[in-house]
Image (cartoon, rainbow, N blue to C red; front, side, top):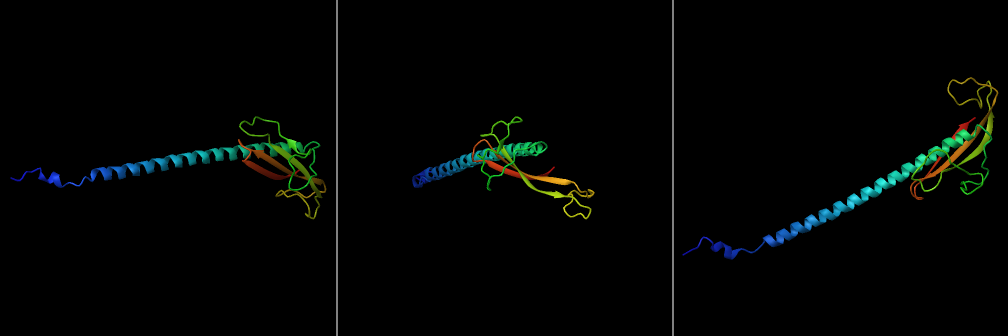
Length: 161
């Protein structure tokens, strides 16, 4: 008599190896997903640090431009700028939170120009009439750091007064 359950005697037991392979694949996918999430968190933190550094440098740059209206402390040191020089001004205005150190700026006096009626050395502004007044030019360089000292942004502008 042939039993209808006789086919069970010839099974090779492939369920266990297949389920182990599936478990291994799920483990690899989980580990990869956690590594990607960790990397994305680091990228977001670095982006925040960079943004904070830019904002700090921008605030110091604007303060340096405003300081040219009076008698600014002029930087006459070497290039690249020595940020420990006494002529480097530390920005202390505004509310900058989350930065590792206060931003700093320098002001350098560039050669003056005089506007003339021929247009040589005159104003760089479009449509400005030529004149004979002396124009002072300043180079303002600002350095800001983010939440860590690794995030550094240096901005520079040429300012006419």
